[in-house]
Image (cartoon, rainbow, N blue to C red):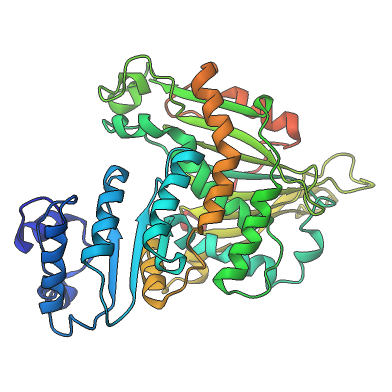
Length: 446
């Protein structure tokens, strides 16, 4: 259902280039498209939704069928669409569920307004706020790593961990789509949702069970324990073009014709958070994310404290546990071992579980595949609950308003770089130690 006048043949032609189906799947793909139908209508017109309701009811077993409404729509039409679904298009023989895509508002007030509107129409168990990062293999693996392994429990705390760094890097800029990005910026686009979800899974206490209520209760407790963000713990930046490069790399953010002239929207942010509870008091959680950086990477890095009573004349580096979300999903631990040979010198090495090597013949489902299947099954564990969303916005709304009202100076960084040097200085200041002597090598490249 959408506003455009289209046929199923039109839709198939539009999506064909993006399908991962092979020639061997052609018959199944044809069967799939035969099961699809399309209805055109207006989002603000109840009559259009009554026609949609009649169309669904006329399908085989349609009257008693479950109904899932996926709102792949701009937020500006959410109110009209959800109201018309509720009043004109709900099924009566099975369940009714609604998937809502981010952004879930722009700040606390707009998010609360949207949440209030949705709750006036649907029960919380009918609403699935989708964050595709919660469907990624390694993000889902965080709970298993933490709570199914005895070796991590005793050291997962402020007594042993010096710093936690959550990283999200993209190697490309806005590429002509800056108009949409400029409305939200990198903090709303990535940090307030994807990265905060990862932080919660790293920091939360063990839930009573793996039920969605128990897991999300613990995540909310973490969010409520985050102290207000201090401006001295924030670096925001905007990329400029590389004068030596051609194409997109030679263009800065402000060179994108869809970006308003003189925009101060950050394309990079580094923010240090602190969680005031017994487990994490004093441990910096550094979240850094940006566009037009030197690589594509999303990871969680726990850096442990120095070994007490060093007997190796300062040759030892800090241990680290790294959960690589993308690309090349992996879990590896940086540790010191004896360098092979006649001498008794320690060197950095790793214990490495790279999924592409360990699970060579296993197809990892796409994040959306997992999450949509969860909706079918009625599992909300990997979806964002309303109070969870509210607490996350309470953390970031004061920062966002401060950035937008006081025009905090932006740190500029060149397209293809690691980001602003000021961010590295901030990380060093709060206790993260970057040695620069070790680099993980994917087994795919060996």
